[in-house]
Amino acid sequence: MGRRRICLFLLMVGLVLCVVGCGPKRPVLYPNTHLDSVGMQVAQADIDDCIMKAEAAGASANDSGEAAKNVATSAGVAAAAGAVFGAIMGNDVLRTAGASAGAAAAGSTVYQASKSGDPTSIHKNFVTKCLREKGYEVIGWK
Image 1: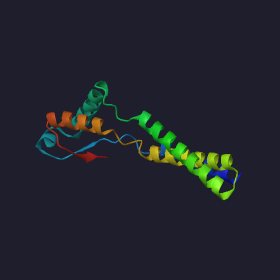
Image 2: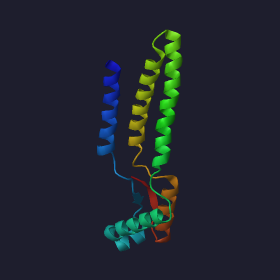
Image 3: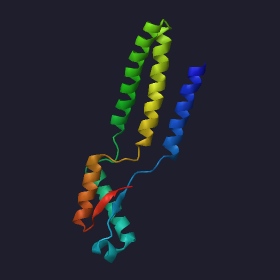
Image 4: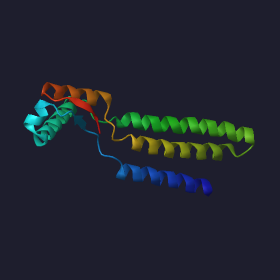
């Protein structure tokens, strides 16, 4: 019962991070002469335009397939490690492997949720290039 509570706790932490976690990151612009001349309202509209162009071109902001693959891989590795540990220690092998896999999947879900606001590098590069062509200088993402 204790392992189940730990897994449920980790799952709840993951869900909270998903709900409360940072929204998608956006480019931060250097205050050059172009930004000074157009103002932040126009700059934000230009950022939105570049983000929409990136999405339309297939450079999506996140790769949910990669995140799912990472969670499944972590669970599989933990199940194998749990089975070996259970066999060596004489514990119930299937129960130990299952608990390990559940804990790893929960932990990996929390990790993936914390990264959920990070756009893919292709998306960042596309938006940065688009903004550069409009006269802006991207100094980072926040």
